[in-house]
Length: 360
Image 1 (spheres, helix red, strand yellow):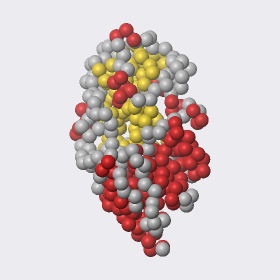
Image 2: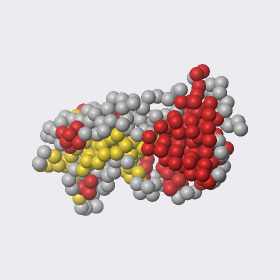
Image 3: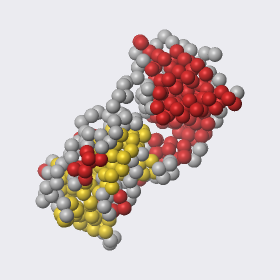
Image 4: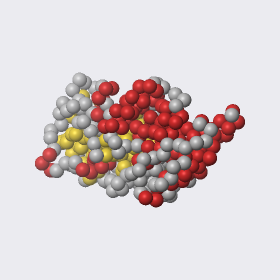
């Protein structure tokens, strides 16, 4: 049976095929190498970095003390989240065994990034990653004052990248809790790739970091420091009401609640608003699969793979969709491609295909 295939805006080497298995093989030719993503993280790499991650202590206008984390990004400059310092009448950082007064700040409220001027602080500045993009599955380490007490080092992987405002919000499995907001997310080489910011227990324990590109591109000049005072900027993008949050956050909530029909409607609007993004098509495929609409699921996953041939989750989804439709050759082709990207996910797909085959 002839299957839908990714549309025509692929390189010539990826065109001209029409059957399901051939489509999978053609798209596989366009995959970027995932070599190096499985490199294990070495704790020794991150021990020196921990001294550059400081505790941020905020005297709040309503009384009491707020606690967060911050990362030293230049001599006398620490970056943290604005939601940590939003109610501040005074701020100090704790590092190298003592506290240091913050004399100025520069806030980007909607992005939730706040730079702190700490002229007497001589902590070592971390390296900011210059690489254009992370990759799904890439190992990362989170350092922050989890619980507001001592520094915590947690390892994980990049689960997803959500394009937003010229960068990509990093979804990771590296866990953190209250007090770690403003801490650092680092790659295997010890370069800062993101700023720990918020988490979503609703979607199964997902953790999110702001992209380091946002830190680099609006670094404050000497004339841009303001006095420390409560901030009155617009709420951060992730703190908005549900209907004005980014699509990926609204979709995560619907996915967690298994509200498939609403997810299909949302991803339709999302795909029209952001035609170059693969994520709405991947989630759309998932919703179609869950509602036993196999042909539609294949179409959605095919479009996701046309836009992002390296999306392991979409390879899993299309393989499962083909298996559900009884197209064993296409599902096995997806499994073979996935095995070169994510062995664990490929094993899960193999088990699912075998289970469906036994049932039939």
